[in-house]
Length: 110
Image (cartoon, helix red, strand yellow):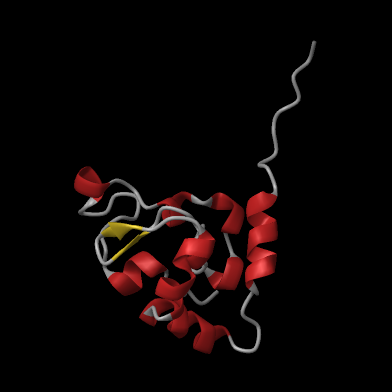
């Protein structure tokens, strides 16, 4: 299996689990978003960060997908993934569908 670069590696932000900036800015939501694991060949949301709310860009916390659209469209990493995965890049509606699914919950016996 070929390992692909996740956003935290590409951007060198240090916000992945165990990263050098976690104590200052916390772990990035893309690094922990398990529902996107494997999308575009990434770990957790690492290659679909553009649909994950509250990631950081240029040191500022970004909001929801609708507020991130302009910022992410001009992002070097976003464009890197689009080119690297073409023509098989996972479309945004498919990524959002994954995010809308709730994690499996354990059955509570009564």
